[in-house]
Image (cartoon, rainbow, N blue to C red; front, side):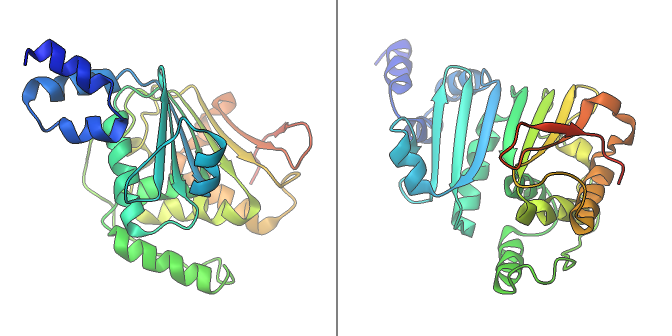
Length: 251
């Protein structure tokens, strides 16, 4: 079969089938790499996977893991189940590895930000999942429980072209942002500060900085990003079912 015809057929297949066939030959892999490098925006959500797929038929669900993906033009939305397990992590992170090179805009939930950072650390996903189970078992009573790791060696930036990141969080998820500082992964390994135009935290169920415990987690996250010199490029938005209000961070 002529290569151009084979590639045309592969382009009509599902996302996960295309990824599987990337191993077919060098030409197919190069074509798919170039194709997926055109993805400019990522939306990464932790949701009930059944509800997400039922509400949008364009989602393609993985055959084994509780992960689904939808690609429209230059935008990809990837959903991982809110009752995630280790097998889901590997599939989810594998998708990000395929799509990450050309990404300029990222919108994600706070637990996913923590997952991405932990995947770059010296801590195994299995160990981190066990840690998450402990936190869940104690219903986050021990909010200062940490899983520390030494700093990792130099590595390539995960999103080298990213200029805009929005992280959605709830009050219960604030600790996920604070823990990112513990994992020994510099923010520069996730995004390049020189290309960043905007980093925003958006809290869905808070009115402001009244909660000292939340302020502490925000402060830890801000230390990790090194955002003290970002000025207008760093912002925190509080919604709480009200029109969004932007507030300066003084914690």
